[in-house]
Structure formats: structure tokens, C-alpha cells
Length: 196
Image 1 (cartoon, rainbow, N blue to C red):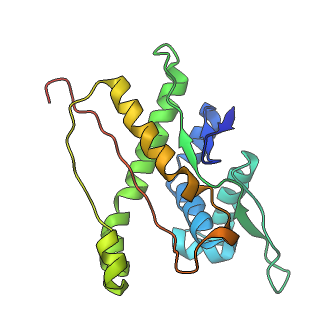
Image 2 (cartoon, rainbow, N blue to C red):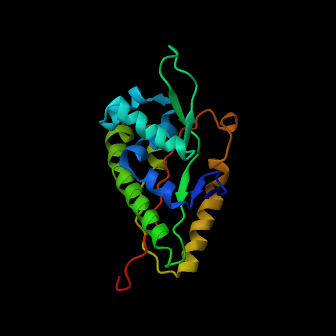
């Protein structure tokens, strides 16, 4: 099962979908398609370090769960191109501790997402930041802030952040200012251990 959140992102609650998405190649495929648009298995294969047939298998697996779909045909009409079917997604960790299957699948996917995204800031510093003009360079950044809050307060803070950025996430391409660009907004809220 899944539903959409205020961003139009898919909220994944189905353990089977979580396990399907948790594979590193599939996370990479979804990331590439979301950022760069439609691609074929042949185009994706070298970036994944797999054969085109293996890339095709991963693509079909993602399509089975509705995460991607057929995209616009390639100019030579021979290669099947795929596009993302979701703006973004998030994982709903089951609240019930007795839901072992759901919690295990959710935590497996969350680990995969963390591993997949942890290299993004270093790649950005190396590849993108040197190319930015001063305005974009100043607007970007990193913060590591420690808070002392309750679980309910943390949920309130995260909800407020989402409320603030929702209009920008949901803005139609036609309404985007001409000098806008995609910004990867990585957000971690990592409660420390009880002795932290």
C-alpha cells in the first residue's frame, strides 16, 4: 500500500515495495530518472556498473511496483525508455513494534537510502560547487545542529519544514522562475541514543 503526502511524494507502506526499492541499483535508477529524465536500460547500465539486460531487469522490477513507467520513445524507436512515475517518495516505518516484517523492510530501505545519499554532498563539493556563481554558492550549505526535543516536538519541527518548502516542491515547471534550478534538499533528523 502507498499514498501521497503533501508534496505529491509516494509514501511507501508496503514491505514488498520497500524490499524492491532497497537494492542499490534500483535506488540509483530512480535517482537518475528523477533528476535527469527518461533513459533506456542501455543508457543506464554503465552508470550502474551492470549489463543492459541486468539494468532492464531492475527497471522492470521498479515498474511492477508503479515506481517507473514507459517514457517517451527514443529517437531511433528501438530502445525502450523509462521515466519516473513518482515525484519523490518516503518510507513509512510502521508504528506497531509487532509488525516485524514491515519494520525490517522499512529499516532496510532506509539504510539503503542513507548509503545511497551519503556520497551526494562530497560529489556536490567536487563537481558542482566550483561551478556555482557567488549567489548560489552562498545560498547553499550544510548545518549540523543539535537539539533537545521530545518526539512530538521533532515531528512538529519536521512538519513545519515541510510546510515551508511544499509550495516550491509542488510548483509547476511553467511557474518556476527563469533563474531557478533543481536543489537537492537532504534532511536528516537523527535522534541520539538515550545516553547521548
